[in-house]
Length: 505
Image (cartoon, rainbow, N blue to C red; front, top):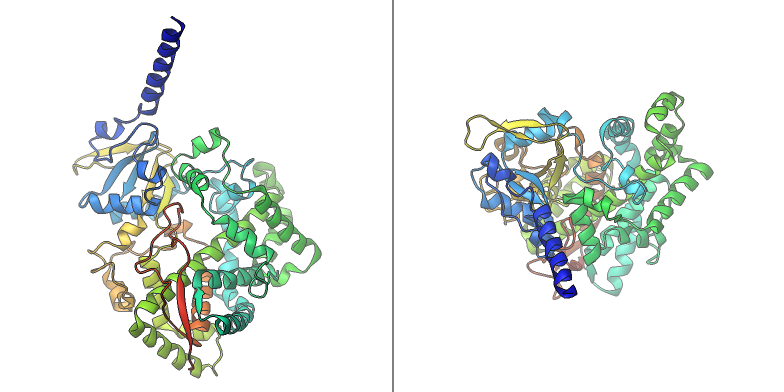
């Protein structure tokens, strides 16, 4: 009797959980919106949840499968969400109706992830607007030019590192090598800190920052929940980053501000000034911008800046190794431009390298480091109905996802999308394509604030490498590349190993 009673309770519990988990699964059908079939507990993102595909690949598949539709519904675990395919609707989300889609859908708990939640990427509403306005002057073209001398010093250290490393073994993991360069650049240019990543293989900065992007099964699951169901992340008290990482960044930032002169480094000088502005009294009274908000911006810049640029450089070198004719053309440009600038890698020289810009843009098309954009509808919003007649209402709080990888691989915009072809980014070809078909840094008011910095360090690193070395595949090179399904960023599984041959300009 007791056994039957327990079985009845268990059955009731299972049925209750099932009906609760599927309570919203008729939402898109009622509106007449085509949608990806859901499953209890995991919704439409089953393959992502079980790490059979990465988030960017999942959204790309939706984009490709539902051709001709302006948008597609899916279920983000148990909640309705939408993938936007139409360029006009994308413009509405990112620019035209930005005020209603200003916030990212992802949300971190401020107690569990104090720096991650308070960084510019995760900030929302008036706090985000205030911080964005005050940090934007840091990244003007004039400020980039002022930073370049420090970047070039890191470039010279990069030359020494490559010379010593290649002398021992001509085969290098370019992701590992370029990440050391970008860590040194960010620490030096933005924060006035000497990280010694190129000189010391056991440098603490290298160790701490690389931990941020190491995705095991549990970390990947947490990231999936954060991107698709941030409310559940809070409910389960799950944090994305370890306290040791936050403590390390806090100590690095505040020790530099308090005990050295940050005024020569643009990011720290702006953060230091922002934290002491007398006219922030009323603002602080309303929004309570305590010290962690400033350390959080440093955390965001560290983590975003080093990973995106090193990954882009790695993918560019991989493609150049597979396409020696493109590599030779780029090296010829580097040679010609540097000769005009007394064989010095200068800010002006980098700006003059038009083919290098094309190569980087094509790399970012084929390998956008963040392969999707996410937004949240702040208020209910009407959009055209799928039938083309009338409208439907998207409720407040709905997750909006823009599949960059799908757009970047759409043959309508990029014929033979799997082919690496920098000629897609001549001025003429760029003008012939619609807007919002190439958005590796996002678009609109929430475009990546560090875009100029990221492009500059990527181009500088590639120039230092290709002016001295020819890269080619080796026996350890993956052809084709296998991508990490656990990482929400676009990342190769394992390293990218290439052979370096010394050359001269």
